[in-house]
Length: 274
Image 1 (cartoon, rainbow, N blue to C red):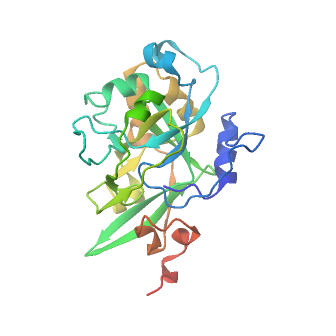
Image 2 (cartoon, rainbow, N blue to C red):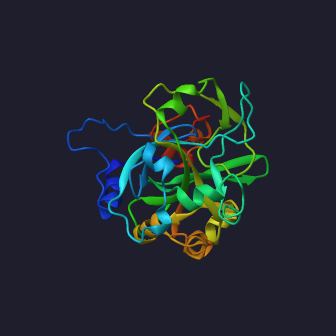
């Protein structure tokens, strides 16, 4: 996942009436080019997350959001089957085809839906023993809005966590089994929740590289995702044919390392150094 260009993401969020950064610049922006699971990210909700919402939260009765709300969340929902003291890979994706029936996600997709604004994401094509990286962005909009579900988190929940090393996929969006890397503990304020990106079947040129893709929505679809009041509408928004048209370009193999988080990740492959 990539957040290297604040102007592009800001332009898209302006369409939704939300500033990416506060007017007083109290939240300095730090560019990112290679975001891995367990990172804290800006996400959009249809209403604020607080303790009252955790106890009495019903979006199904809301036809239009009063206002969108930007908050920090952490990428990766803890697996329900994880055991205390053991390192278990978090759930970073939720399959749209089964999200309404899987016990782990069905209550989240009903009550806790979010949007993740990013410039684009990385995907890898397997060619023999090689993995060739590509950068995927949208064709029509300056940035993209990804559908997500989240699990609310209170300050007490966060305080109870053991911030030990957690195994997670090494690279941004990787939909198959990949080498694991250690995600460092983060001592920033607790996030409002933990999210997973909703995925669907890839189509067109993207399907040549990989069979899965995040659900990418246009601004109108994103608003509908946040306030959808029936399962048929949710299914429609998660269908492969609704995914926004994308642009795919090969990029530098530097992105293959989660420790590399700079503009070199987006350089053409011919600039790779030996």
